[in-house]
Length: 158
Image (cartoon, rainbow, N blue to C red; front, side, top):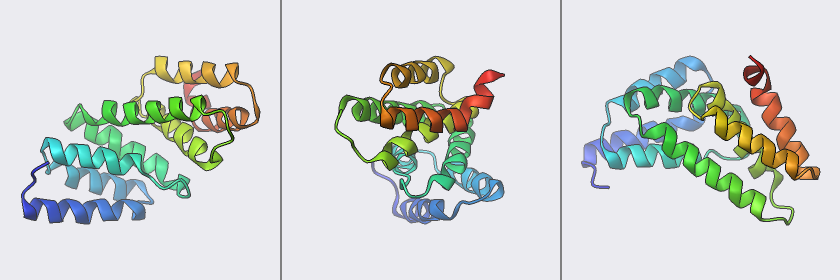
């Protein structure tokens, strides 16, 4: 992850703007800026930062998914890397049967749903996640299922 210092400072500035991305125009502007920073280390850092969206800021998820979809057109490794992190987190959440933090579970499935709407997450993956949630039909899984259907349900019916 050796990034030149001026590029590093520019990246830090852009990543700090992610939490203020609350409309399409800001997301598109940020995506455009990220496109000019092209190195494997930068892309990994962008994916890590998108993945670490605070669970209290669910309103940012559609814009994070939009940024991911835009960047995936330019850097094809960004979308699959973020999807892999979210899928692994989902599996980890489902494996732990104790009642873990519901906000984390909701953030995870909503993010997966948003990525589905932008066609970053494959349909096969979202349908297998739906199946896992239906098979484990308990309190928190029902909440997660409802959140997923609320986010991507209409899109999946088309």
